[in-house]
Length: 582
Image (tube, rainbow, N blue to C red; front, side, top):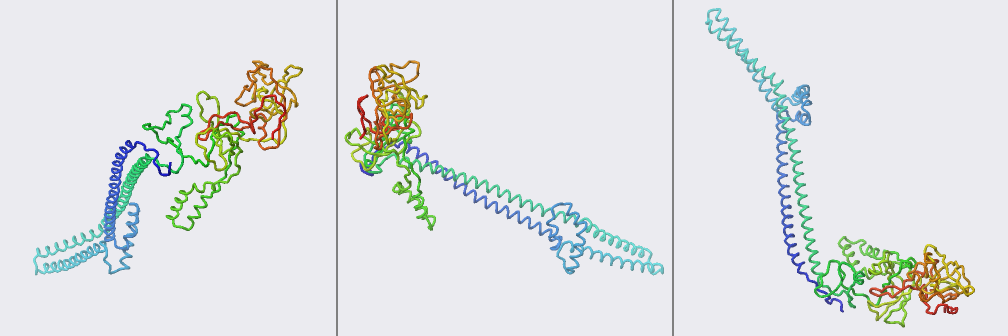
């Protein structure tokens, strides 16, 4: 398979139909958004007109008040907020303000008050002049009538004219008094009320304008969000359609993906990759492994997983520093382009993004396809939760462990079976060991166990303290001496109610051993094992067999593990002579 070669083509007919419907939804959302934007423009124009009209009404009301009171007094009246304060000002301060204004501007006639007062004063003077004239006329007529030079009726007529002039003068003077006492206050109050009403109308109009505008903007933003959501959905469908044809990202070997659940026949859907088979979103279909950097996918029993240590990394921030260096001192668009560029080549700097603090435990690997060759590797990762197993082994808890093979390897293919031995710990000095099936006990006993030692031809129970162990041997720290003969199969010697089992505690073997059904006649000798070579040791006290996950493992993925050893596994009959590791 070459890079860019077509691998799989999925049926996209349902997506094409969904895309057609989505295009309609996108166009409708776009029209709604455009209409909402136009409505905002119309509302803004209408609000401007309403506000301008309200401001004009206020200005006209202020002009009317200034026209009546004048430019000096009107500014003092306009800021008044309450009717009682206005009445108090008109009753006590208006007369003094008018007098001062008249004194400061004797020739000014810039207000209706002065014009009206002047008009009334003029008519008072006219009526007073008429009264004086008729007073003289009535006096003359009376004298003439007394001398017989004028008739009595003519004298009475002139006297009536004098009385009429006095009435007219009193009427005009009363008009002046009414104007000062009532008309001024009435007119000022009316004009002041119009100004205040115009101010409230302006404030009301501005508030209504803001409310309308906010509502329309909110509706426009909502329509925009709907459009963006629908458009984003359309892009997602386009992307899904484009993904219906899968191309090779690199040159290599294509491997059909099979989940752990499918291997054991469980799961809601089998991962069968065939023509016409349905697929679901997020389902893995195939993998293109890097054949030069292979890994073993092994499983570790829960009794040993605590002793397996994977690779420990610390982030160096190399890519972040590189990205910051590219973006320093550059415009925003260039900085964004640099971020995209760095993300595109991030995989090239993957090895520099982390610093290895601990490389992981060493591993020896044997592949079934190449039984004569032993590979070296390291533990990369250990799963924190157990893997899903088959129904028939649901009580077995196994943890997935990924082991990387050192160096560049060739001719290995995904799916090959492998056996791994993790070198969990080592012993730097000789230790006393006995066959693993000779030990009896339970987890509750901790590091203390029991075995049966042949004394005078009879098996005797003896308390021992165990230490490290592997598949074949277990270290005895206390209770035995070198050369003691122990029973290889102590099961027939156990009481059924004792609750103890034969075999190394906390392992999958339980009471099983090579000679579990062979009766109690066999025997093994306590031997001294040891050496300085790395990997020749056993796990810490009471945790056999050393946390060393075993094969058969698999590359993609591995098989079920066996019980591994904490070092080299020795194949020899139980009870053999003392043997040293080279």
